[in-house]
Length: 338
Image 1: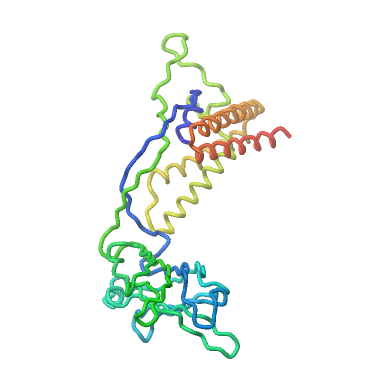
Image 2: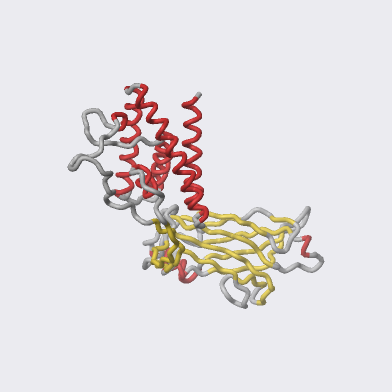
């Protein structure tokens, strides 16, 4: 979008665009988790065993788990809600567990103990709960990965629901996440389809005129005391850009990551442009307000054409953003005309 705005500000046609396949390596991390968090997702049970005297539709199932950390006496335990009348319950529940990555006891727990699960049929009136099977999930894969997903059905494997040591036929799907692997970064190679927009030319051929003289700049587009032009932009679009940059900066801070200098500079530029432009519109006469409305008309046409072109090229997200900006400009024009 920055390239499109530059082209518009300089009166150039919409830049040409094309799609490219780009492959790059990324570091897998879950920035919303702190280093002391471990998330456990209990997703669903699949074809759980039915006790004698019951049909699959009679099962009322929940799962309870036991993570023996920091020790057996202070193990972290919890359970899901009860899902009724099915042998393939979907729980979709998550639990936040506390860990200490550098603690020797934590390393020992994930390498040798893991998390124990019990799949339980909820008893009714005067009836006790019945354990349908148990499962043990080892977590040693967290040494080199920040996520472990398991759906296993072979006998004696970590998350196979077992009746003692005899396979029951049921399966349990679980996922565990930590912020980043314990011993090394997890690199993933990904190939994505990117929209490449040709850059705006560095210089635009001058219109024929007196040699050595630049074309005059309209007075409404000049800053007070300056001979350089500063294009007017929709205040609604500037507010949208400011809000989006604020959300981006907040995400970096919540992840305890430094804000990239280019993002901070973009944020300062948007704020300064908004403040300068509001001052011009408040202090200037009817001329600058007429020029501002004319500029909004040009921006309306520009974003309309950009949305149409990007949509035809298959860039749906960029087209949606251009259309959203067009609607912001149109609403601002309607308010000014009232």
